[in-house]
Image 1 (cartoon, rainbow, N blue to C red):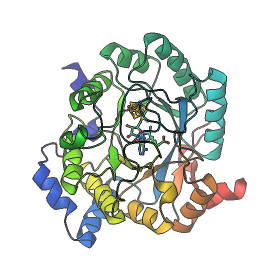
Image 2 (cartoon, rainbow, N blue to C red; image 1 turned 120 degrees about the vertical axis):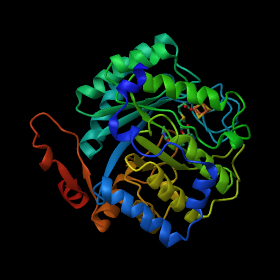
Image 3 (cartoon, rainbow, N blue to C red; image 1 turned 45 degrees about the horizontal axis):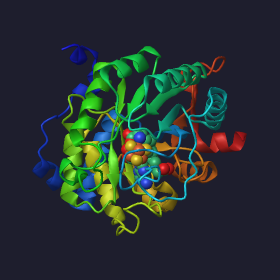
Image 4 (spheres, helix red, strand yellow; image 1 turned 90 degrees about the vertical axis):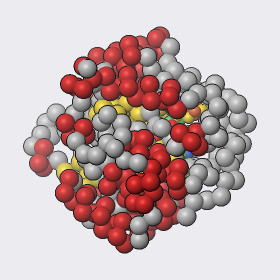
Length: 348
Ligand code: SAM
Ligand code: DTB
Ligand code: SF4
């Protein structure tokens, strides 16, 4: 099959036959053993002292027909959210340039659609080309795609498509009723077949159990290729959504899930995604120790606040974490473009 040919070798390697029982045993190992296993795997594949920074922008906000129980943007929930039509190109490029200058290497654009229309896709293709021209990697998340739409995005030079499985197949129906798990897997298949890199992960703290977290990790790790990027979001509770008021997750379960994701998908970037604003520095440090090596960087996620850049730079400096900056024209020498947080903070 053509899709197999295009798969990046780094992620087709590794185990793809995880059972939910295996993953549940892994998640339930003594904490110190699990973290040691994750650190060992992490160090074999990555520089343990470097993380990747992506910045998010909501290019079309609210009014989504889907009913995802966690989401501020569903038209079916009564949230205090200002809707915003698809942003103009120059506004998107200005924001991307600022994100690049602040140190992000990837710019991720999200739209509150069930799926893009072909006309809307056309506008997004121009955004992708424009952001690429700034020297950044590009990622978009637009909902479900047809095979042809995925091909068009690849043709425009898109690097990553984000499409989360969000939870286990067993728990999915309790969170979302307007689409199926199969719909999600189908889009991921189109993304892979078009040769795009896959960004896919989930949300924790929605009332799921440890077995659901194990089952979600199995779904991700047993895909034909491990996603290049695996975002692990902690539910951001938004007033007016059905999941507002859900009992908060034991933070060690978040650390365990990151560690298990690291072990099960050794070559993938694991992103500590939504929810950092409410986390202590110590909890974030544990997540990095467990193998998280990417974060969303900037003042906002899509519709909610993120840990701010100043707090992040201070944290990275305290932990001695370095990160890559975008390769800009006139700033070559890839070896020399890895910055430590204190350097960037000092140059601001
Ligand atoms: N509409 C597209 C879709 O759902 O695929 C793209 C945008 S959607 C907002 C992208 C992802 O954001 C979701 O799959 C979910 O994982 C995450 N997300 C949305 N609301 C969240 C929340 N309140 N807390 C944590 N993650 C959230
Ligand atoms: C992902 O896994 N998390 C991001 C991104 N992919 C698109 C979105 C997080 C959204 C958090 C809630 C909000 O800001 O609306
Ligand atoms: Fe729509 Fe995406 Fe929010 Fe679901 S998560 S309601 S599909 S914007």
